Every structure is written in C-alpha cells, then in structure tokens.
Amino acid sequence: MTVLEVIKRSTPFLAQKGVESPRLQVELLLAHALKLPRLQLYLNFERVLADAELETLRTLVKRRGQREPLQHILGSVSFCGLELAVSSDVLIPRPETELLAERAWNFLNLNPSGSPGTQPAGCHALDFGTGSGCLAIAIAVKSPGARLVALDVSAAALSVARANAERHQVSDRLQFLESQGFTALPEGSAFDLIVSNPPYIPSGDIAALPPEVRDHDPRLALDGGADGLDFYRRLAAEAGAFLRPAGRMMLEFGDGQSETLRALLANAGWQVESVENDYSGRARILVLGR
Image 1: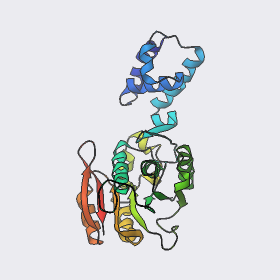
Image 2: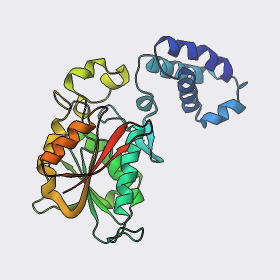
Image 3: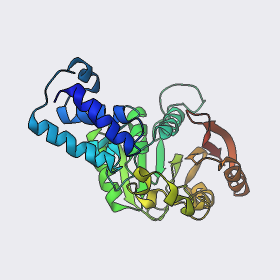
Image 4: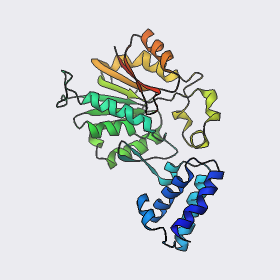
C-alpha cells in the first residue's frame, strides 16, 4: 500500500469516529510513523510502506480513532516554537496560552522605564500551576535574565515539567515546587510577575467536553469548582502578598468569565490593566496590578 492509499483509506475512518481534520491527523500520524516531515509525504505519495510500517500506522490510527489526543500519541506538542513532552499527567498546552506566554516575556523584557532594553538583574517570575512547564519554560527561554519558580500540586506533572526544562536547558533558572497553592514558597518570596493558566472549567461542564479533553487531560487541570472560579478566588486573595509593588499578575480564563473575574479581582484590591483577546477574538487574558 502506498502513502497516498494509506491517507485515502484512513481519513474516512477517523472522520467516522468524529475526529476533526481527519486527513491532517492521518498525515501527522503517518509522518511520525515514517520519521519524515509531514510535507515530505507529498513528495513520496507513491512510496510503498513496509509491513512493519503499516502495522505501526494501523496502531496509531486506531488509537486516534478511540479519541486519544494526537499529542499523547506523538508524545509531544509545539508551544511557542518549543517541543515539549506531554502525557496524561499534564494538560496539553493550547495555542491561546502562547499569547499569555508572549505577554509575560514581553513584560519581563522591559527595563524599569518601560522601554525595550536589557532586562533588569534579579527579575523573578512565578508560574502558578505549571503543568507541563510550558509557560515557565517559554518565559525562561525568551527572557534569559529571568529566574522563575513553578508551582504545581501534582508530583507527576512536575516530573514532566522538569524533563522539559532540562531539554531546553533552562533548569538552572527554574525551580519547581510541589505545592498546595502558595504554601511551598519560602517566607519573603517576591516576584515581578505572577502568571497562571489555572483550571477554569465548571465541574458540571466537564462531562460535556470532547473525549480528548474529558478522558485524557487530568481533571486536576480542568476542574475549577462549581462556577469555574475557585482558583481565581485564591489568586485574588493570596497572590498579592508575593507580588512586588510594580509587578503584574497575568491570568488566562475561560469563555464568558471576563466580567465576573474583573469584579472579583477588583473587590480584592486588584487593578485591571487590560483584558486581551485570543486568536478568535474572545477575551482570554487579564493583566493586573495592585
């Protein structure tokens, strides 16, 4: 069977299973199985697959048809141009979160006068609920003068994050702590930036999520309590104690939560500097000061 025949036969199978963009998914799985860049498939449509290659591909396509996330099958995801390992122990990073990472490193890369320049010495940032480490690692790579602390309640997630930090050679500037909220931070800890993409799905909405999310992302990384805002209440009440006077807190949030969060944070003494949209024009990021 040739590369093109495999694509044509596997695409309807994934479509019938409800997988979005089925041809693209088949091509990515095939490229992974053949250890080729995806675009190289188009130059090899007539290549005949060996029996072992076909068997490998069948296994991968079957897994995807069972709605296992593509990123879990491939073992990694691209985030801000960085290849990061993922597993069922961590939330798969979303493209929207890249905007939060970019906003964060741009802030850290401003000098005290607010103009682009050399990053001030001793710049510190905190990633609350780091998961795969995607935010902390991207910020560390793009802000080479910054030091970061990354917190997570899950030891398994922190293991994935540490491996990702080592892969991108930022372990010397990143400290990972297993922590319930802020409890593991040493007394006197202070940061120029606190960044977080906390769980924000209301508990009752999780059952209706796509199988790739509902059945494979860790519930700890999804469940934000009855209204999805439990972690924002904690951040509103506790984060200020760890933020330097000119510092900022930047938070990702879910669809339709913007106005409620603005009020919640304002009532806790935070000033909303801006609300920023994601790629689809939906409000997605809060930038806050004290």
